[in-house]
Image (cartoon, rainbow, N blue to C red; front, side, top):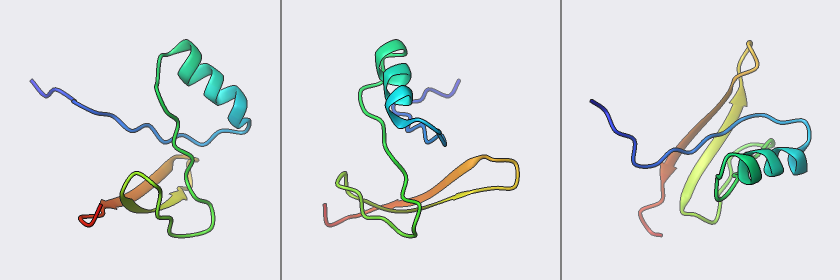
Length: 69
């Protein structure tokens, strides 16, 4: 059986404050992570990432951990 110790959901949303309320307030998530829309991002949690939306509207985020963090 596979056990997940950590999940990082990345979902496209139309209304960020409403999404924060739903995912954090109703589902118990601690933090929402906004994905960059204009290319490669270096978020504060120690990764380098780029996001894209596929032809079916799925958000796909590619990332690698920054070993220097």
